[in-house]
Length: 420
Figure (cartoon, rainbow, N blue to C red):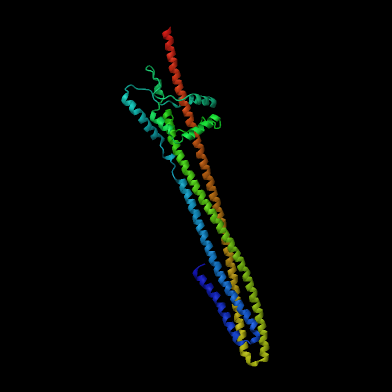
């Protein structure tokens, strides 16, 4: 409510009070001792109206406080929504990785020393994607058996042939890479997933499309390095998203508790409103009783006119003052009706605010579900990456075994030729 309206209401409330006081003073001076009970009831009615006006002002203050608290709650909900939008609009760490630049740098690191030391051209050190697809394992049981019985051979213990260049088609890991891979932070996670693969809990998915198109002809070592970097970035992103989800859950719990407090306060205000309404009814009854008593005083004044002709002027003054009090009482009743209308308006506005708060709460719940869904999708991609790493390890072991087998066959043929 604006300041001029409050001033007008206070002026309206002050006018009937002053009129009642003047009428009471006239009655006290002019009415004999027989009308003392009527004056006491009129004074009680005036004090009741003043109490009603003071309680109405208190109720207005409580409504203003409730509106301020609802505005603060709406502002906090908007801040939470903005935080969620900003979190979703942030660029992911995986988007910052350029696979072509990563592969180019890796090729420069590998081919640089080879070009300085060798003069004759050699075949490419990265096997084609068709070969990798042909060397993939056919069944999970064979993979498990080979992973338990076979171990990768180090670069120092591998025999090299002078007549054939079979070893040039396979990327040989150096000692620094092996030590980095052993000290990798996700080693325990990979070991757990390998255990699940051995027990048959996680099925192998041979149709995973994780590598980009530029990395199709990349060697196994480069693929493992690329997937290792990508896996580390995905782990960091999963940690960041989990922290953000925890923060959003804490904010939602705080908002829910705040909403409960506001609902409790609203119920308390409704109860005070009901008590105010009952008090207004009581004051109406008191005003009606005062009116009836004033009519009885008029009868008494008529009897006094017949008995005392000298008090005619005083009786006329009493009647005029009585009519003025009736007019002022009517004005007070009109003001009470206006206050009733204002109370009904405040009730409707409070209902609308509660509906808006419920809608915003439903929106926050839907946003939380969407974030949980994104988290589950990231975890599924993480598991697929780990499966692909395991498949590449086994492919590497198969390639090394095939190379050793071809080398042993050549020696066996040479031995047969020498024997013949």
